[in-house]
Length: 378
Ligand code: SF4
Image (cartoon, rainbow, N blue to C red; front, side, top):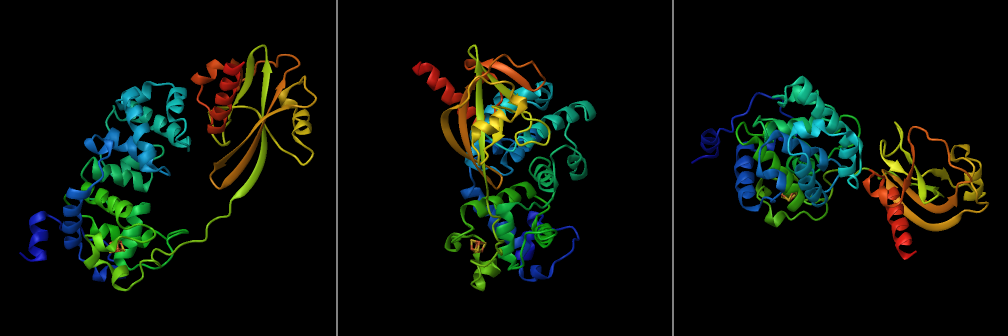
């Protein structure tokens, strides 16, 4: 059977879409056939793939943004155990959602997931929108996520472009132009639209992602094991190392801060991160910038911390952590409060054992564990 006949039998006819110049050498029907055959035997077994339920697909796609698959596995199963339906997620307090998200990072995703669940329940009677435009109306659902839900859960022939599929498509098409910057991805979206089959679009998209994750690796792609090797322009022209073009990495910004464990009568002071701050909505220990003059003076100069009883704070530890492109060295010091601070919104005095119940920032959690261990040791 010819490739064209095979395509007709499998229903891989495509809607009329703009055809980029680079696509001239691609054979979409053959690529779909070869990729789907490979996917049937080599696909990754991932917990969110065991059902096409839009809720499960959506939660997994939000978790997978900026986060590696292996890390998401555990969080996904735990999240689905606690919130098995969109209704249960919508009914939960935001704090419970953040507590379950703790450690996954990029907490804005969790807040938007929660807000979108409430929108689905209140405005869509608990049913997911049935097309890309409707899906994009949900908080936190952008072009990629909407297309992923539409193709995987709803079976619509929507293309997707994310880190793995972008690399595969750029190499297949020999697209050597830089992809970063405004509009840089547009040619890849256009090529993806010509490749996605009308039937099996969800499996095709997941196969592209798996091929990028398992075979078409960023460095040293395994072209000898690739089902699309015969169709790959980058391989044919010996340019797999050059495609996709790499952008200069943004240099890390180094910061030094001091976290202050302020204690009084067996309790410690924690503050809730406010709007626009990193970790918005999560609890942390108060922080001051470490100045050249030293943490003690910085703390003394911060009126918000209230009157403290120690002239020189006791040093507990130094932690290192990263937020986006910031590398932060965090000195942790302890100090007693001279008198209880006034209760205020976003501040709490809390026993060390009870910190376990709070949704905390990653470094805040590390400090809480440190305090727990010190308390056990007496
Ligand atoms: Fe990637 Fe090599 Fe396959 Fe081309 S042949 S898609 S570079 S793994």
